[in-house]
Image (cartoon, rainbow, N blue to C red; front, side, top):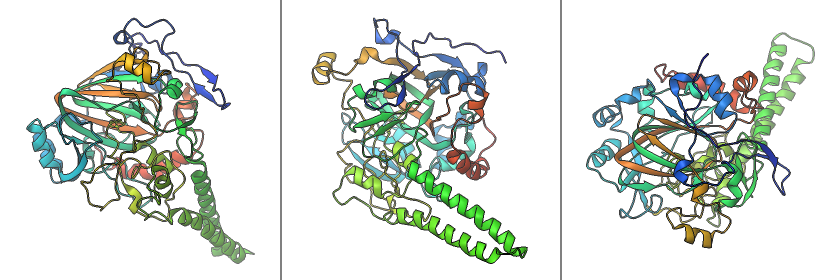
Length: 496
């Protein structure tokens, strides 16, 4: 099908290279080697949503790990998201809201308060810029996986697609709502996300400063970077064997063991029903195999009800958290809005799942935990206490608000703000940001509101039809999603 090429010139260039000291190829998405005269002159590509198909979007942006600004309105029910409508559909939902002690404070430095979503909307209508709605605690589904969203998004789920067509076959990880007031501008801080992000700006204006994963080791992150996968997925020291798609190798191995055991048990039951020779022994062996597989999961979940590590450290807590590696990581991204949309600064808003145990959950070492490392709390625990001082691994210690001289003096290897790609997202536009791209987000507007999708980062980067149809080399995420997808699609109205 015919389509327009990107309307803004891109200086992003992608190539594969070897990372010194690691022997791991890593995407070198970089800005032009030509000197930058002004950061404002260096931007990212843009494309009209009506001029590109999902397979072309995969080929040109997702598989190339390139951010892109997406113009054009989507025909979703989110167009109705004004105060009255939101109140009528979700006003009674209870939410945890970030509260700054004063208007000069950064989000994440204050406390969280619990209130009705309707009351929060009243504060927004009164231009209260001390409150910010970010990621909410999610429940564990009957399948043992964390839900895709929490209230108030759950009450609004019929207004948006669970899997936007532009993202093709990427598997959804989380859907979040971000709301606040920033008449004078508010910054998220510099950080990166662990998942691919589709950021849908519904109200207000956002300005992003972007740095590619190839500059990760010059970003002065709170955590110590061990490697950057070819797709940009960043892994920190002491966080386990995290694969490029964000899954934990040990977790996947246990999943495969259990799935194999379940299949063998089913086959043994059929053989037993048919009265086949040796069926009884086969059935007994299959039951034992499944018990062994389930015990592995239960052993990992043994510490799920443990809230807080022995020494209070974030990393220890991440190992006792009952959520899988993939879930824990982004819960400190903060736009992903505190971690990607407005990501960074809001590092205390994600799920606090540590108190929710499930036999199918486990504690594989994590990149970051959503509970303690992010300043979160176990579900049901009292809200309102001060957030933890420790920032997530994914946050940079560089404050871009400081002057160039101060930054250069304190962080000599930092590439400088002039090395950043700049993009301004207007109301009704979307931004696609691959995992691992560092970003600072500045919010503007009497009211700003965004919906963001996190998706597990693809590790099959074939730009052709094969990659589009199967963006993951393994079947872990696709298999889990195939089981969950019908439930979530039933809650939507067929949006794409």
